[in-house]
Length: 302
Length: 195
Image (cartoon, rainbow over all chains, first blue to last red; front, top):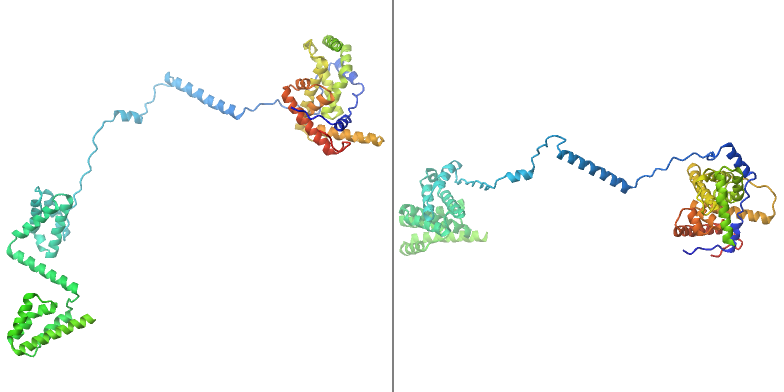
């Protein structure tokens, strides 16, 4: 290391720091002390400092703590192993429980069967119980199910619409659960319709026709309001004629006229009557038709 | 010739210490007369106080009296030994002083009429003394031993129980600090010292 040498000015300044000579009689005082036996430390006004205690560094302190803990742990473990503390305490552990455990199959979850719901809730348990015990499969299952429904007295009390809804729901449920396929269900229903008695088939057709007619009326917007429905027959029956045939003819045409739609047969029949009717009857019919047409036009404009 | 003189001195020191160990008061007076000024100088420059310097000087020489029987013949001699003892005692005193009081000892004003030249020299000396006292203890000892006592670096390092490199580093810092302090005091003749 390069030492910065002092300049002459600096040396001159440092040399001006003169030290006075040693005090006179220094050696005499020293020898006097020696002669008197006072050769110990010169008493001063300054107090003695306590001995410097070295504080251990954090590393040394930490290592001491860890070392102590390790030694105590080792000694305790050795003593425990030697049986100084008596019999060892049994503590059940998870690993031991796992060793003793056996492998078994998990229980399958219980299948909950939803009871069939029909219009009246009180009927549900009986219907469901019958469905659950049916052993047959495929189309036969559908037939069996529908037959059971039909034989149920409560099912018979329902309206045709409700019966149809309940039967459809049951069949759909069977299809959804995989009990039958959709073609099987369709075939079963067709078989049942084919094998049904003629009276029931006719009733079903009639109901179907009625529903179809209502649908058509709703679609064309010409469904008769109560006022219109009563007004038309009145107008027709108030026609200025006393002829029985004219009255019958107008009476027969009323449903078709009220419905606003004539079937082919009705149209043919109406034409035939107009051709064969008397002039009065024909005039009455024409008047009724004209009024009907006017009413329809008025409704359309509204 | 020089080596012969040193050898004679060592022989004398060893003989002197042997006599001191034999509780020869004349030998002790001789040792005191030889080394009292050096011990006093070092103590005074280290402590900056005459009373304390005398106490330290007496203690150092009393140690020679007390420990003469354990003297190792053929060593560096009495002077280096006393210097080391004195410096250590001064450092110990400074440490105690720092713990007890930070107050400066008031200097007694010298009312003797002096010529301007003398006044200036005294002012400069006082400024240097103040600067030396502001140095840390070991830096102060390094400057005093090497500059004022003209001790070589390895000897001063031995006195302070330091490695030579560490001592040189300490001395470098001490000289730089001292130079800066004296320059700031503005007592240099040209106002600025050369490096």
